[in-house]
Length: 187
Image (cartoon, rainbow, N blue to C red; front, side, top):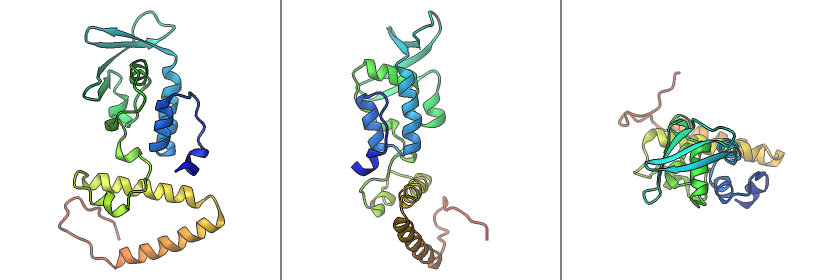
């Protein structure tokens, strides 16, 4: 994992940024990092029922952020997380001013997580994860494979050979019709 983090440029030095760099895919991290950088330009004001967050140059308007630290729940009126799966600058500002040093677990969707040292068979067999989440996990693994393989000729040769053998094994397996969520492919 350390080798992967050496190529990442931390821009804020915030603990949340370091945490995000260690768990998110490079793409997701870059998107979250953009929001973290922008969050520094926002002010947050605690109100009776949440926080008002607005750009430091604005005197009116802003976004409403609701945060329940004990439950680990945060939401914003801009709904960026619901749309993209990446926390917005408004929520990150509130988390930062609230001395939160890591992104809460529920705001690190499976689709944006790096592949860890967990054996792939354990990842796929997780009963808490549905079929589409398993497919997304596979996409993340393939994305990491491509990223890591492209770093040298030797890595690319190993990956190409391994994927070729794996694809042959997969094609030999029957397609299960018992899983209603199975991906259909056009032949």
